[in-house]
Length: 307
Image 1 (cartoon, helix red, strand yellow):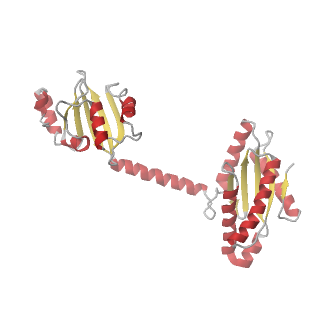
Image 2 (image 1 turned 180 degrees about the horizontal axis):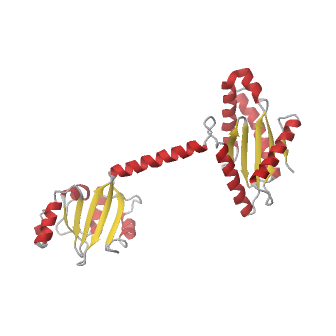
């Protein structure tokens, strides 16, 4: 169908406007009161296809384009479901603007104007560069946020983030009446490992411990490295007995894993404390640290539970 606006029987003033829009880079489409596409400029046709004779209703145009794999991307893969979601919003207000993505990967900002006579004018602007910039900024933000929360050597949660997580998880557990345990872990004679094999040996041991702990503890548990050779495990839905049993099973697993990995032999001491409603997280951590200190005094390579 010709893009000449006179073909749709519009007033001369409107025809003159559409003639100007015919060479515009924005995508312009006009729908009549029955929501049939009666005119579009070349920019619109390049994306959504040309008007047809007789004019296609908006819904039928979407069905055609879906079959031909062009125009708006329909993520659900069901054009009829998509239409049931979209059509109630179309023509519901006199002015509407929204972003939509295309099967080709581009993004459009669509502005629709519903005229008093029931005709609808749609103008689309390519915002792909803005969307890509938005995506880049979001990725950069996420990377920066992750870096601020992550220990660079081991990839575990760093001191600030693991302590925040311990506090938030403790509050959540106490609010729902669920048990929670904190296990503070310290590698034994870590200075000796560094002195005997330089810092590379120490780094290898820290990374080995972090990898094994991440694999061993449950998916919901959180392992972090507050600093140095110290680690903290937040154990969800764990009372003192189950937390102690888990740490001791990990001790056995870690000894076997050292042989398999060929890293310097090392052990750890641990202190376990369960959260109480009458104390804050810092108090629970202090009890776990005291239990860890008792494990060191008891000869190391063991676990003690705080009263």
